Amino acid sequence: MLNHVEGDFNVNVIMGPLSDRRRVEVRTSKHPVNVISDPASMRELMLKADLAISAGGQTLFELCATGTPTIGIECASNQTINLRAFEATDALWFAGPIGENETLQRAIEMMQQLFENYETRTKMSCAQKRLVDGKGAQRTSSVMANMLS
Image 1 (cartoon, rainbow, N blue to C red):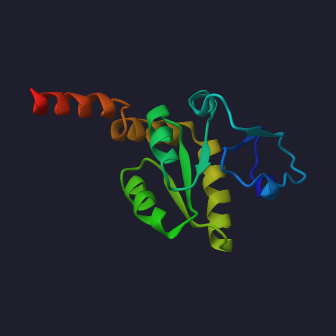
Image 2: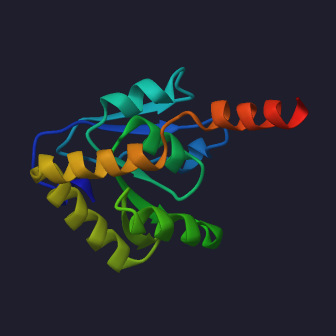
C-alpha cells in the first residue's frame, strides 16, 4: 500500500498490548518501517507524526487532542458513527471500511494528498483541536464538584 505513495517518509506501526502480533507482516517497502510494541508514550509518537491512519475508536480522541492529521478506517461496524462525526467536523478523512479495495485506493489517494499539502494538514489539525481540547476531564470534575457542593 505505502509503495504507491510518493515522498520521503518513515512509517511507524504501533502495536498495543491487545494486538495480535502474529498478524503483523512488514512487507518490502520503499519507505523505512518501524514496528513499535507497547510504546511508553503514544502522545509523543502522535505529536511527532505528520499523519496517522487509525480505526474509529478511542484513539481518534487522542489524535485530535494532539492535532495529528488522520485518515480513518472502519475496523468494526460500531465505529461508523464516530468516523462520520469526526469527518463532518473536518477532523479526519474517512477512507471507508477495512478490507475493501475501494477503501485501500481512497486511503492511498488521501495519504498522497495530505503528504503534499501542509495547509490541509494544518487545517485538519486545527479542526481536531477545536473538537478535543484535552480539558474534558477538568470540566467534568468541575461540574461534579459543583453538583456536590
